[in-house]
Image 1 (cartoon, rainbow, N blue to C red):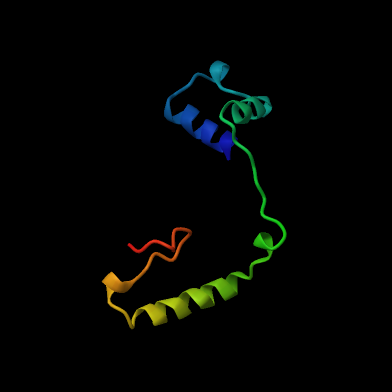
Image 2 (cartoon, rainbow, N blue to C red):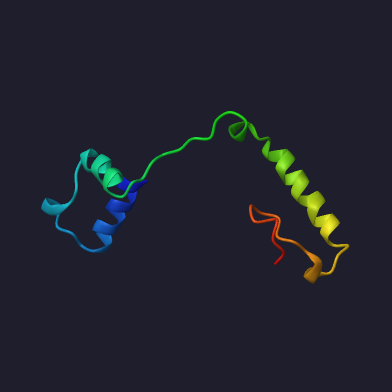
Length: 83
């Protein structure tokens, strides 16, 4: 993705061919400089059935329709705190 973005910006900014970054050697130093890491989900987090998540999302939407918006709580990681 970084290499594709690099090519896009080089074209957008009309960078001369002799000054364009070539190869992928620069990617590792770029990632190290900006502390970018690839993290893959594995174990329980990586084995979530997406269809089950969609079904539960619809179920929660149906449940929430019974309540006024001011009575809804935030259902993300800060779910302990009301909106």
